[in-house]
Length: 242
Image (cartoon, rainbow, N blue to C red; front, side, top):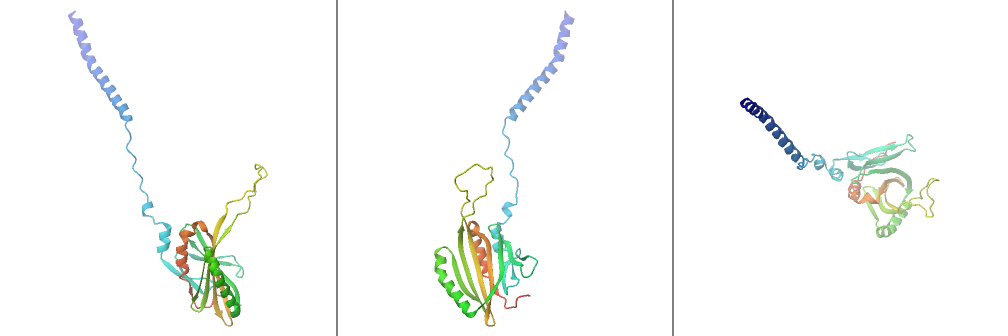
């Protein structure tokens, strides 16, 4: 009997460490499971360069300027360095010169630099008298008209809003039948033209700056920038290049 008791004692003593280890493992696993339910710390927001990047409107308003000759026109403008003269077309007589560059609204500006037919002194008086009569109507409809001298040259700065509906959509033949005409919403654009007249003997050479594709929706962001740019227009007093 004594031997049996001793054997049982040895077995109990030898099994105790194993039981303790098992309990420790269970507790550790329980703590791990409980820990999984704890909320994770919020992620650290990534650092971006947005805070240090200037909006395009501020960049353009304060960007370095350059005086650029307006191609065949004897005038110059002070524009941001990113602006440039681009000729569209290969033939000299049919090529179209444009002054192009970005606007604060994110749109691209295209200013056609046009050569127009020379006019006589009498015709010039008629043109300016008609412009004076149009001033009140333009201002009543949200437009503007400015007449001023640029050295020997004379200028008419005319701006008005144009509203036009887009043409109906061409629906495919398998489209659902409809009794109503399908049209797109009415859109508005800004027509901004500058006529320039330079004395040339008994006539006046005529030039034009035509600001193309100015959408009314983005014009509020671009108006101040464009006005400041056009106010730098100067007569270069030079013969146009051939």
